[in-house]
Amino acid sequence: MDREVLVKQMRRLERELRRQHGPVALFMLVKIESWGDAWRLEVSTKDFNRLGRAESIRQLIDLLRRVVDREVWSHVPFVEVLRTDDRFVAVMTAWHPTQSVVDLHALEIQGFEIPKAVLFTAKKVAA
Image 1 (cartoon, rainbow, N blue to C red):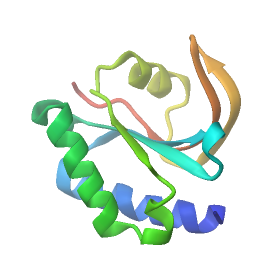
Image 2 (tube, helix red, strand yellow):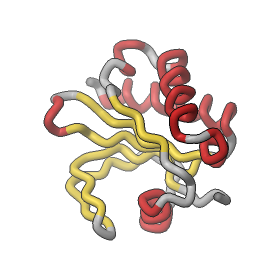
Image 3 (cartoon, rainbow, N blue to C red):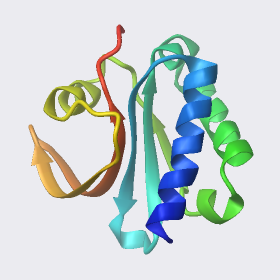
């Protein structure tokens, strides 16, 4: 998967997610090492806190498939929705608050192992 295409498509998804669900606390892709060119999308928004996990996942998958081209979303077989007060979200927003694309490689941050990832947004929002 071409990184430039991946980033462009995911940025488009993030913009639409922000438009529909408000401030984004975390938006990142984590490489699934054992699956070749597959990624897990990890997202946290304040709006998803109130919707509940199952409905949030359903809405995120629907948005992913509507906004992102099939050639890209087919490489994202897993999505994870985290509450804005989740420990991992807190760690990421404290460790590297950003709204720019950052490549992460083989990191361990406060007990969380990240083999490879692309971090798009990590910023504190009210829970």
